[in-house]
Image 1 (cartoon, rainbow, N blue to C red):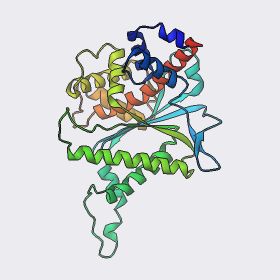
Image 2 (cartoon, helix red, strand yellow; image 1 turned 30 degrees about the vertical axis):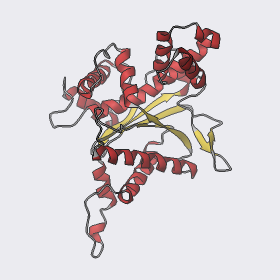
Image 3 (tube, rainbow, N blue to C red; image 1 turned 60 degrees about the vertical axis):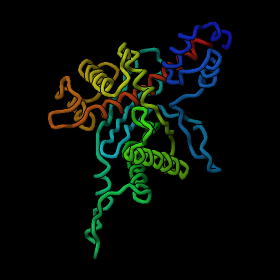
Image 4 (tube, helix red, strand yellow; image 1 turned 180 degrees about the horizontal axis):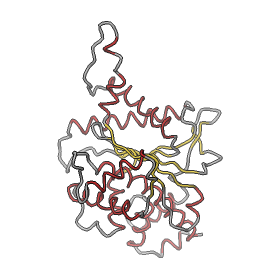
Length: 308
């Protein structure tokens, strides 16, 4: 394997890394080592709690992958649940996952639901949401439990948050809040898995630039497309074209959990918002992230087959 990889040019190694969703950087030796290290690691592998309480790879992997993709936010969080049979990944035929659920919501609403009994209690007063750790912790825990019970995912992909905006030296307060929520969500999911509440699954942190680069690069849209003001409409346009033409992903029109979100893209033709002001880029991002994980796994399997 090492001999075959060493015969490839740098550009070919970078293409392999990008197609599999692995870090694309370093010298030829670094990239070759990265491929070797990642080749046998599946992003769709699930883990279970062992008798000793340690998370270990599940002996029996699920027959159906259920990828729950989250585009992080407090005011605007988007989630997309995709389903794909495990055997389809090995078939060599085009894989077209199905959208089971696709929605956008505000965590402010979840906060209000958690505190809706406050006013009913003697002397109780409903409080506005604050972003202290003690306030975010129950919100993150409740969200983690809801994601597990409502969607029964095998994989949860969480958008990795940035630390700075546009290379600025200052760190915005809103960025800190979302980063804090992201960390708490990862911790809550880990605890639920270690305690056996989430019986089998895995969580991944996905860099949004990697997802964007993969899809825009694949469709020849990456040249000069770096800023969000440029990439957002491109990604929305890409998702809209798939939904209209039935490419890369499908959904059942009699399933409102998926069809309602899909219809927003046709209503807002050529725009990144609907007429009522609903944002489409968050919905597009969580779909693209979930699909990217599936395509990266297919790329890994093809590479593994080619090198054997």
